Amino acid sequence: MKQLIMAVASMAALTSIAYAGGNHAGGHGEADMMAIGEPGDAAAAGRSVTITMKENDDGAMVFEPASLKIEEGETVRLTFVNEGELEHEFVMDVHESILEHKALMEKFPEMEHDDPNAVRLGAGAKGKIVWTFSRAGEFEFACLIPGHYESGMKGDIIVTN
Image (cartoon, rainbow, N blue to C red; front, side):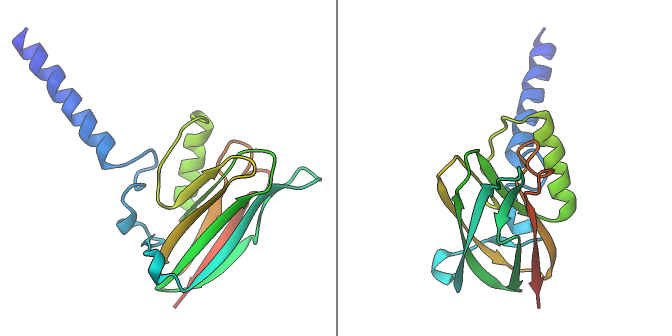
């Protein structure tokens, strides 16, 4: 019995460590190791970009603008306004991670997360992310609430050096 209790306690400890070490898509919560960069210092932000989230009359869901061009090493204040009638989110990462996160959201649509590279907003809400784009490359942003990506709610981030 004592061995059984010890085994259960060990499994609980390992599970806690696994959850503390990262979130649903493996890599969230480890922002300093993300390919796209890391959370930035608001005082270092050289510019601000406002991104609008909304649904169009034709049923498409969009971000405006749908693409961003950023210099490697630049810190940008991204401000978000959800002008739509639905809840939307903005998640930025490499394409493969976006697709992994999307698949997980399809399985668990009510999942809440607190990732520094993401923001989720109800209708009429505003939010922000301050981010340092420390690596050049092609990245993606998307709304991963089920059905939104397929309705056009995605875009590109090009970080140049």
